[in-house]
Image 1 (cartoon, one colour):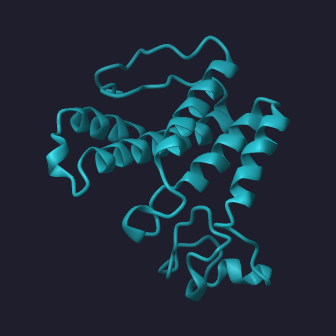
Image 2: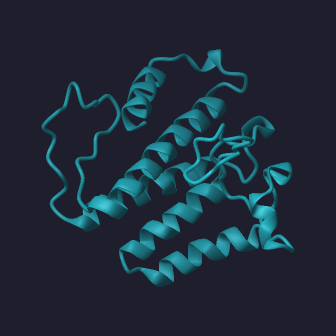
Length: 176
């Protein structure tokens, strides 16, 4: 996913703004979404492995196989936070074109806050989560089980979700 984001971002640099419905605005939104997806993937890797080589735009595991890891874990988390902060500054609370499944400002701020918590910066994380809460874009559902009901996909509680209508029996422990 990281390589795909980097290839996409590299290609996006050379695309004329007129190609997009709203010109430069849409192009920047596409860039912000790709950078946030890349940051989210790095966040998931960093949670488990700490310092990881962080390939950026134009870099892939084929053309930059020996890129060193950041010197400190903080450098790793700072890069993730920077990418998510950039994306949050560009994206809206509602998904682009009303297409649920796209990255939004709420996604970026929430995962930026999670990265801050991994750094032990709890006050900064709290301020980011406060923005999400006070946006009035999200709210808790009245019943916890609604979170797992595919008929209720993309509720006011979903910051980001992958809706899985069926697992075709591939879910561990599933016999359906």
